[in-house]
Length: 259
Image (tube, rainbow, N blue to C red; front, side, top):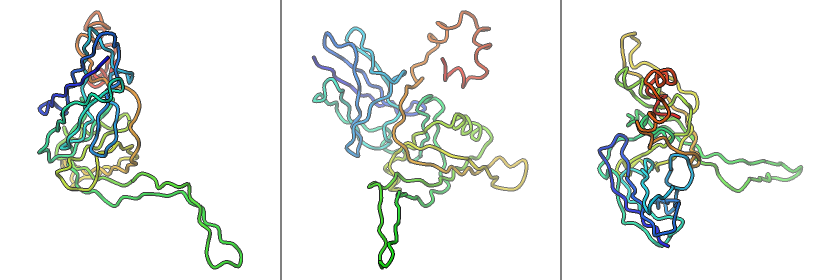
């Protein structure tokens, strides 16, 4: 049995994504799609529920919103690891950094990075100073931790600020997607953002410009699914009337997030 993946770049989508058409020989009912990233690691492509992609009638469709911008990637499956797709590149000339909400991709947005400060890679260690010895004895757990630091993000309008607040409202893990063309030496990574500090560009009440300090920790790829495949058909199936929709969801963002 063979499973093939055909990627198609959709750079005009907001946020940019890669469409993955999956085809399987008779008998295959599910597949776990893998993306080969520039660092040589394979990462699962997120489905709507976090489970393997369901194959119906020999075909399936899934979108990848987490491919690194400006870098060539290819795709395969756990079921047919030797069947690898052609390489594709998502927005090769992209010069903006994106913050991607992995659970609700529609909340994702490009950001203006005002500054990217120092980063720290911590180590867990204990230092013992034996009596009479010139040198201490140092013990570690054998692995330096992932980077942590602070990103300063700039917004120029109240609408942009509201969009950023919606993106960070649920405090979930975000994908910091840094195009390789920027040459920052910072790889695309998942981050957990701590307390966000807001400051005005000018100390004047009507000034819309803001700076936001995002203290962050680089974390592993979060588990779970994505609501990227949620459609009006899903909404209609769950709600008999428009009154039911408005009673259940207080905003468009709640409706997008589902269920």
